Image 1: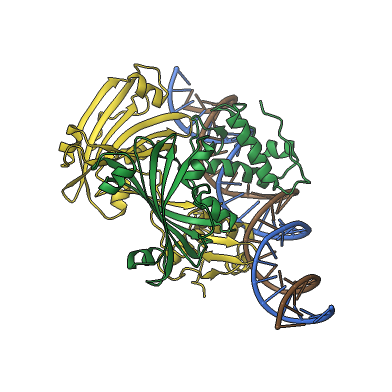
Image 2: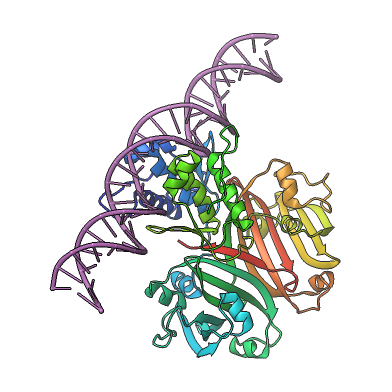
Length: 244
Length: 244
DNA sequence: GTCAAGGCTTTGTAATGACATATTGACGTC
DNA sequence: GACGTCAATATGTCATTACAAAGCCTTGAC
């Protein structure tokens, strides 16, 4: 049967979101086990004192996350597999702290420079525009994990006064009211060069996981271009795909 | 200004989908250029003779794809960046043919076997259950690109009678009426072993891109477990992330 | 001249009602 | 007993309406 769902109409949190949160929690906590069918939308709406579209919207958000599956004429079921964390528009720092780790970051470089042609093209700037060039080494449990090189247009943000060894880059973006909306990223592999090998305590020529990302603010302005390399024995990307 | 949008109410295609398709086409064709604002929802609904929720649903699907951005109090704009293909629930074969390539596939192995403990756990079977073990080498333009190892429960499908050198695995799934709904994949990197190096015409120890995927049918049944390695100079994963 | 308040525009959230369509299972007929 | 039909069930699609909240711009006061 169902966990007791309740909604708080005085809360500023949208009703559909409250329902989605509770359902998600019930699934993660094991109250709802895989292949369980949840009550049909009409009944659920009546039970909660909500309208069907609202309940539908709540269910839809979980379907998008790959936690529920709808079948017309049948019902809605809990997906029979543990849900791993999706690749989201988050930084490595976010991911690690959320996983209960304690990342340690060393800022290797923080310069103002003029954008070269390739960087300017990625960030959709005119060549020579002033940009911040940032290079950081992130470790977890004493092990170097990632070498991160980022370029941010000076017009977007001032990085002079922030201590990026204690604050994640994306966290700082959020603090400045900068909302990332879209990002493109490419994941590949390469051979470690001498510089990378030394910093990551790998041998030269060792395989590394690479990620290049361009992030956009509200879809209008390129805000950040990052080129990262990871130690594959300590890090990998996990993605949940949802079809249809 | 707007392209002339029209809907066909006699079509079995949902109205919201028709609108979404036309908007997407207009964006890809360059009729709507980045940073263009599309008409507000109320006006658009009136213009099309549709209700606002329907128009909203159409816009939402494009927002989910990362092609549009909504801003409350402002309007809806076209995202200012080319959209690359998202990592979807598709096979390598699908991706390549859609990109205009002509993949060539060699089936290295196709066996019935009993699932070992690890495989059985991934596919949520009892140990020793009969499975198909498939190993394929895929090339493009004469260059070996990927070495793919897949395991499929015999209970799911019969692979005896199909020629997997001409038909993609996922394409065959679809032909059998098997709809994949959810998949988890992990992307990493590794060092090429002797076997992999020889088949991919790389040197032993060269960096390779790896992907492991488990796919589920309607959320209820694990259908496929795949472990692939790619040559990183010829292949990488591209993902479009949408925030909020 | 500057800053604050308020109004306008536009999207966000929600309720209600209706009909369409896919699936399953039961019933009845051949 | 096998097969087809039909009804029950649940999600899919769509219309209409209303109010809330956020952003932008104008207006007005100091």
